[in-house]
Structures are given as structure tokens and as C-alpha cells.
Amino acid sequence: MPSGRAFVGTSGWAYPSWKPLFYPPETKSTQLLHYYGTRLATLEVNYTFNHLPTEKNIAGWKDSTPEHFVFALKASQQITHVRQLRDPAETLPVFFDRARPLGERLGPVLFQTPPWLKRDDDRLAGFLASLPRDLRCALEVRDASWYVSDVYELLRTAGVALVHAEGERAPSPVETLAETAIFAYARLRKQPGYANDEVDAWAARLRPMLAAGKDVYAYFRHDETGANALSAERLRDALA
Image (cartoon, rainbow, N blue to C red; front, side, top):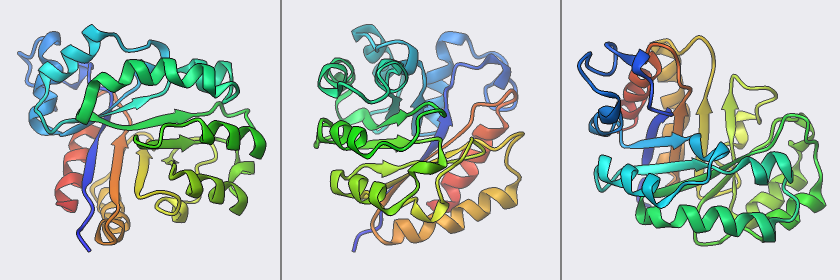
């Protein structure tokens, strides 16, 4: 069985405060993404939670990064927070029509529900049935009521990854990380950051998933100094 691929990066890039630890001091704001792409090969874009991506956004992201670079997009709040997964036939096409121009650069789409949304199997089933089957989707729920076998089975049938968000409210059980899809999606958001031994522990946790042929996406929280970007490089190298 071929090994899975590891995609490791951060949530966001446009942080001048990452100078000089990650970005060189002379890096202009318009050059941050280009420089990021010389050191890491994937990125979780949270901008798309508040704003639908435009043709200009997509073109700029593609022009600033190498051909192999992968963008994970956080789905619109209209889908997850305003409609709260209801009416997916109305909300999903609008978002995916804007995201698809990324082409092969488009990685998983992250759907993060609000922390007050509790388990609703019928609502979840209707939402999952409306997702496109040709793209990777991941779901982060933030209430413990969701973590039951019936929900896992719904996700498994749709091939949707259950996100583990370490450091967030009510993260999913870590042992379910690679159980519902052909890929795993981890958000490493513990504050204030990750010591080297904690990064190494995550590498040890993710290696068996790669060995089993599953792709792994792992994104560190944006921080003030850029230390988490260095942690992302450490994890990437440990999984190489």
C-alpha cells in the first residue's frame, strides 16, 4: 500500500508580526504569501469564512505559490453559522462555485459549526448528502454531543473527515481522527504554542495514518511571533 501524503502548514499567513522569526525583516506585505510558499506547501485559509473568494483572490493565491501548493478553505459562515447546516442545496453551490477555480490547488474544505450547535442527525444527513463527492470535505463540530457512533457512520458513508481541533472547545476524540475518511484533518491550536516534544508526539501519532495510506492535513494556529510556523516545519520534516 502506498504511503499517504502529509500536508502541514498554518492557519493564515498575512502576519507581519512573524518577522523576523519566520519572515525576513525586509519582506513586504505583498510578498508574505510568496515567501510562505517557499517554506511550507499548504495553508488553511480562514478569510473564506467571512468573504467568498473572488477571481482576483484565487488568481493572486495561485500566482504567489508553487504549482504543488495546496489551499484548505474554511467554508462560509453563511453555511455553518447563519444557516447552521440547513438548506445546503442553497448555500453549498454558492461557495463551491467560488472555490473550484483553485483547481488542483484546492485541498479540503473545512466546515466548522458554532459551539452552541448540538447533535442533530437528520440535519447532518441532509447536509452531507448535498456535499460534492469529487472534493474533500472535513467537519469540525464543537459540542461533545456529536461524538457518537451514529454520527461517525454518517460521516464515514459520505467520506467526510471528522476534524480534531486540539486546544479548542470540546475537541473530537483523537482516536477518531482517521476513522471516517481517506484522509485526516488536525487543527493544532493549543496556546501558547507547541514545544518540540509536543510536535514530535504529533508526528508519532500521525505516522501510522500515513503508513496506512491516508493523507494527513495538519494546520497550526496563527500566533503572534511565527513560532507555530516553525513548529509546522518541524512536523512536516518529521513526517517526511
